[in-house]
Image (cartoon, rainbow, N blue to C red; front, side, top):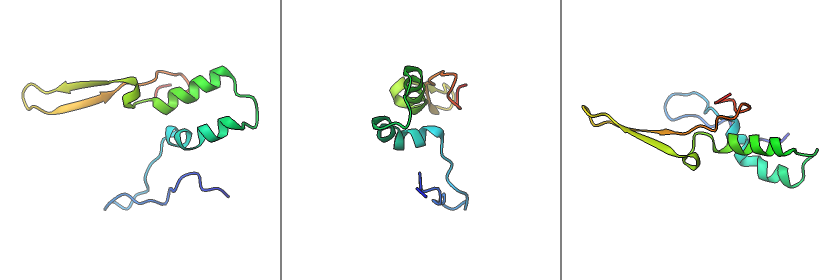
Length: 89
């Protein structure tokens, strides 16, 4: 059996397993799979996989918000808005 990602990693101090997003699996395995797919990959599937891979990353852009009172700065990453993305759809 292939270990897709080392999920046994423990978070520092809290004893819980690290959570992975679908994008983590796509980022690790999509390029390799796309070279020799088991079945034909449609353009829509390529589009969905690539959207999921870049969702909530700097590749889609970042909005920066600053609190005028406290000075706290928060960066918000843009989403892919793809209906097949588990984060957006």
